[in-house]
Each structure stands twice: as structure tokens, then as C-alpha cells.
Image: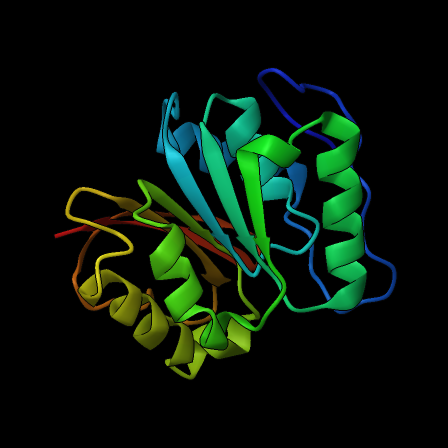
Length: 183
């Protein structure tokens, strides 16, 4: 896995051992960031961060700060290694906790201009991730105009996220990327 574009273009990233996390394919990541457009000066929230590849890509493309939320120990190890390797510690915060238990800490670090969400697909299909995102929006972590990018299974319908308007979706094999604008 590598950084696609920007300041750290071409730099390789550490990935966690095992199969607890599902890295975003480079071609999907490139398409996601093309959909997002310029990120200069934005504050980014990377939920279900894994190795941090999405948040790091945002930082490489000019985001000013990123908050990573991840609970897996192997993923946290890879994330910390990647941030140190790229010298990004001063532009980042890591919350080593389950996303479902991170709301208060996320609110304290927000608000955010962009949320990058790559959860286990089953948690999107069962409604728990859309409900959690709705709570973060309702409580002000993602204010009106913020962009929310969600990866989910292509076989599932595009999720409804309370407090957002769907913008667009793109399918990449078994992965669909949907973008929402906070209303």
C-alpha cells in the first residue's frame, strides 16, 4: 500500500498483520480522492482508520489535521509507524478506541470538514454505522457543508445517513464509495 498523490506521493505504508482490517485498494483510493476534490486546509476525521491510509492520503493532499479512530492493536501499531515515518505526529491525533465509543472524544477534537469512513461492511448493512454518523452530525462533529465519504458493499443499497444529502456513488467491484453532504 502506498500514498497516491501529494506531498508523500509514492511512499509505502506499513499495514497491520492478519486479516482484521481490509485495506482500500489503490485504484479505489485514487477514485475516492478525485471525487472529494481539493483538501487544502481541511480537518479530517478517519473512522475505522486501520493503517491510516485514507487520512494520510488526505494529509498528503493538503489537509491541515487528521483524527484517526481505530481499536485494533495491530492496526494502531501500523498507524503509529506510518505517522512517525512520515513525520505527521504534530498534524494528527489517534483515538485507540472502538468507533462506537468515540463520540465524546471525537466531538472534543472537532468539528471536521471531511469524514472518511471505511467500516466493516456488515456494520453499514445492519444500520449501526449510519446511525452513529447521524449522531456525530446531530451533535456538531460534522457541521453543515461537511463532506462524508463512506465505503460499503456494492451488493447493499446506498445507506441513508440522517442529516445528510447523498451527492454521488461510484462502484468499484465489490466496493461502492458514496459521498454525502451534511445538510
